[in-house]
Amino acid sequence: MFSKKIRSVAGIGLAVALAVTTWPGGVAVAGSCPVDLPQGGEPVTLNPGDFTGPIDNPYWPMAPGSTWIYRETDPSGGKQKVRVHVTSRTKEILGIQATVVHDVVSEGGPIIENKWDWYEQDACGNVWNMGENTKEYENGGVVSTEGSWEAGVDGAQPGIVVPADPTVGMTYRQEFYTGQAEDQAEILSVSEQAEVPFGHFTDVLMTRDFTPLHPEILEYKLYAKGVGPVLVCGVSGGSGTEELIRFEPGTA
Image 1 (tube, rainbow, N blue to C red):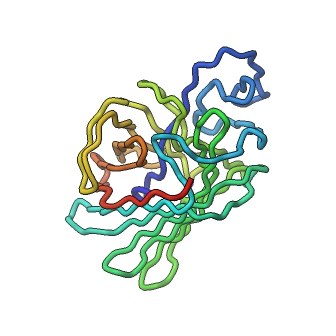
Image 2 (tube, rainbow, N blue to C red):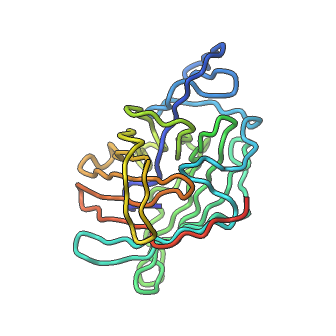
């Protein structure tokens, strides 16, 4: 839902005192909760029984009907409108009923990007990124679907959007599809402040987002409890800023 080159955010962190089973060649699983953060392209095995909803992680609650409106400003001063809306629809991925989130970017009226994201929350409160279907437009026609992926298809692996219990220093992958979607993040703070047109927030989660596909790009993203992402600051690689200007919570 943010810059076209780096998408979606977060990681997972748990303090778990349970018996641990290691899935062959993949992330360890303790009971119903992952112990290790997924890194790079390593496989992870998810249990559909652990994904029963709702998505109520405080750093990004996604009740159906929730809508966020952002103003994106590029380095040259150009402005775009970003609308993110949680639908009541689901899509089955790896046996999990993932929530469908619609993300539309427009510039002066015409749509320049139309994206469907698929998220779901596990029993521990981690919100997983299960994939996205994205299309970029020019003059009303589709010019690119780069960045589209679905967990379990062609080697793509799920990542994390928001952690259940973020801890400073965590690193993790947000998504993985070789050569198409390899976003990663690191949690820098859980005690920041952010002021955007929608309001002033404290105890904000801040992440550093990057991707080996475009090593020159670096963004910082901030999440406010009870709201979700409120600010994105691109500091390298041509990214701009994205500020929350309106939020309408849905019905839990």
